[in-house]
Image 1 (cartoon, rainbow, N blue to C red):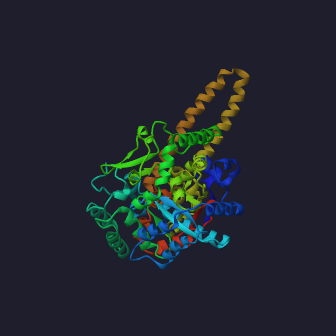
Image 2: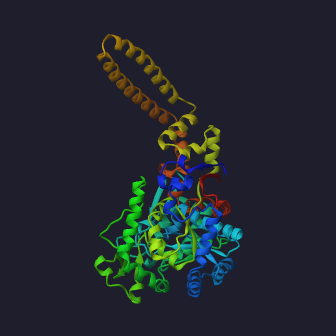
Image 3: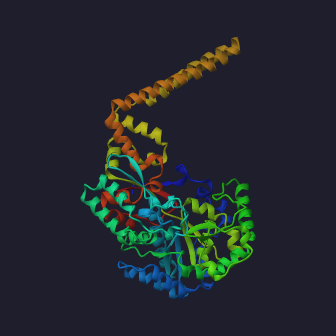
Amino acid sequence: MIQSVPYNQISGYSKLFLDYVNDYDRVQEFFNGKSGDNSTWTDQIKRCRQRDYNRDELINILFKQNKSATLKKAVVKQIEKLRNPDSVVIVTGQQAGLFWGPLYTVYKALTTVKMAATIEKQYKVPVVPVFWLEVDDHDFDEVRQFTIMLPSGEVRKFEYDDGESEKSVPVNNRIITDNISPVFDEVSTFFGTSEIGRKVIRDLRKIYQPGRSLSEAFILFFRKYFPGVPLVFFNPADVEVKRMAHNFFQNAISRHDNIHEEIEKQTKELVRIQYSPQVELRPDVSHFFHVEDGERRRVDLSLIAKGINKEHSETLSVDVLLRPLLQDYLLPNIAYIGGPSEISYIAQLKGVYSLLEIPMPLIVPRWSGTIIERKALKFLKKINFDPVRIVEGNGKEILSEIIESASGKQFRGKFEKAYTQLRQRLDEIREIGKSLDISLVGMVDNSEQKMKYQLDKIEGRYQNALQAANKIAADRSARTMNTIVPGNNMQERTFSILNYLLRYGKDFPKFLAKTVSVQTDKHHILEY
């Protein structure tokens, strides 16, 4: 590891998330305890033990959903733990993205496994790591895209179109079609010349076979590349799960107005103390969906009052706000491993947990990191540039500095110095002007703005000339930036793990499985 960086030194995080990590007392009224406190974990374990769960049916469902020729004994052991009435789970969840979507999905899964093992050892209680597949969702764009960096250094987004992209079909019902083949063909044009690239593409063609569901391929992908990681997958779109959730649906639908009032109350309180709510409320829509003619549609409010029967339950699902409630109704969950956005919207839900008498879990940030590949690190060391600054800084300004350092021509400081000296001389002239005619001061101010504009313009021409004259340095600098902050975005939110599998094969997931930890209060910068 190169360094750990406080989240507040990196742009893009919400004020609520930063306070949750760094100043929990400011946000404690919205959550159920601080995950760093021993007493909080003890209390949460106790709350879950006091509640009844349909463990036998849950175990049967989990064995069915986790069946696989590659299913390891360690996963079987995890599921068997749930027969113990004192056992609990730690959950994370995400959409079943193609090739596992952005890197942070993998980080969430690995954090959950590490946290479960840590809590089990520390509190002497069986803890099962569970990954909640968010496959009731119908937003296909969320799962069909993935981003990798081409050998040329270009950051490229790829898309899979199954032929029904415009339909609101739940992801669980989307079956992989022959249209997946052109995606592999296109990737092969860039990575098919290397032995590692060819092998990865061959393996993925076997996993993402036409006729297989995206959700099943998602599980098989993880089992393939993380065979020693005992993560238990849970698919809430399963009809048997819907039947288990019938009482939840019935209760939540009958109290729909009360639920909305609680969320609204919590949201207004967040706004009052100057936090931006993650999910905007719409009073004219329900929190429930059902499947009709193969597509997922929001349940009309006028139908809510009629209630539901068990047959209706089999087609129902919930929106993003009620998903955590459904999860914690079904599972003896003591903690949820979430990203910054999830932590923000869960802050809107504490009142609903109380209303429905469901134990609210502790919320633990997922592990977060940026990977600096050896070639990029070697280049940065050669020009004596701190990689941490790239993660923290403004992309365009940082790129200019790197190009200057790589080319050996430093001029940015000279322009700043010239402007400082100019301002000092103009200040002297202003003082003289004040004693003669105050209107002269305004003339000096206007002239200063024009001079500054011209200096900035000249500096820009210098920068363009430098990049043109030092194309090799500019290309190498841009490539380095793209590996660390692709498109000036956080790496973990942009790149798919496929970006690294194509280059390093199975060694990369082994590195992640070893590296990701329960140290989640900072962002980690790593060398690979």
